[in-house]
Image (tube, rainbow, N blue to C red; front, side, top):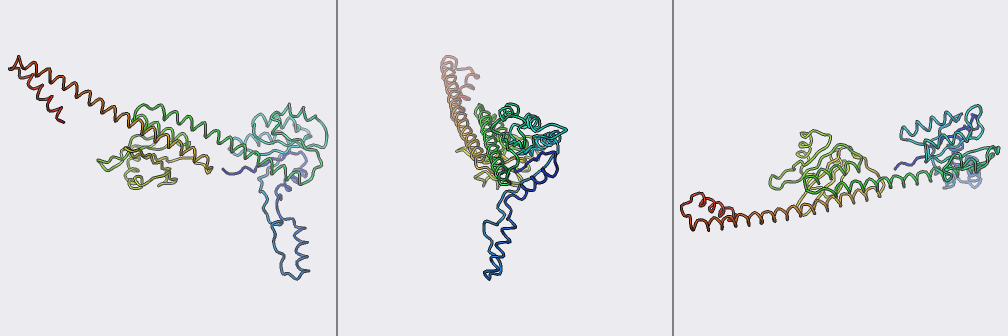
Length: 361
C-alpha cells in the first residue's frame, strides 16, 4: 500500500502558508550551512572533498503539499481529494482567516466529510478554549492545537508523526475491511450444497475478494484430456473456452496462485479427485502480506469445501446405486416367483432378463 504523505496548509496570509509549505518540502534535506562548514573543515585538513555522512543525506520524507487561503476553499479541496480517492493525511489550519470561515469552522466542516484526516489548528491568539475546539470539531484523538510562534522542528515532527499515524490507521482499516470481506466470501462458499453450485459460489467469492468482475472457473477432464468450463462472469463463453484451450498446459502445471498469468490472476484448486482453476481478469491485489494470507485462507476453504461436497456426492451416488440395485433385485425375485405359476408370460420373462442384465453390471 502506497504511503499517503498529502498535507493541506490553510492560512489567509500567503507568505505564511508558503513559508510553512517550504519548511515541509525541505524537511529532511541536507542542511546547506552545515554542509558548507563541513566542506571548509575538510579543505583545511587537506581533503579534496568532505565525506558525505548520514547526517547530510536526504533521508527525510517527501511530502505532497497543497495550500489554501480560505476555509471554504480548503473544504472543497478536501472534498475533491476524497472523491478522487487521494485524501489528505494531515491538515494544518490557521485560526483567524478573515473574511471567511475561521479555523474552528473549517476544521468542523472538514471533519464532517473526512473522519480520518489529522487536523492541526495553529494560532497566536486564544480565541477558543481547547475543550471547546474538541467539542465542536470532534474526534479529539485526531486534533492538535499548536501556539504560534513555533519552531520548524515542531512542524517537522508533527508532519512525520501524523502522516505515519494516518497511514498506520489506514492499514488497519484496510485489513479490517479485507477480513470482513473474507468472512462474507467464506459464507458464500460454505452454504453451497452441491458441486455445481459450489463452482459458481467459489468463482463469485474470489471475484468479490479481489474486487474483480470478470473471470471463469474450469475443471480438468481426464477422459477428454481438456478443461471443462463450469462457470464464467462478464465474458463471452467463446472467449473463456479459447483461454482454456490456449493456456491448457499452463493451467495444469500451476500449483500456486500466480499473478499476471497470461494477463490474468490464476488460482488453482485441487482435491484428491478434482483439479480446477479460477482465472480472474481484473483482480485488484494488495502487496500487504496480510492480504495474501487471507486470500490463501479463502482458497484453502474453497478446496476443503470442494473436497467435502465431492466426497458426499460420490458416497451419495454409491448409496443410491446400491439402493436401486436392491430394488431391481426385489423385482427380479418377485418376477421369478410369479413365473413359477405363470410360465407362459413373456413380459414377465423380459423383466427377469432385464433385471439380470442390470445386476450383472
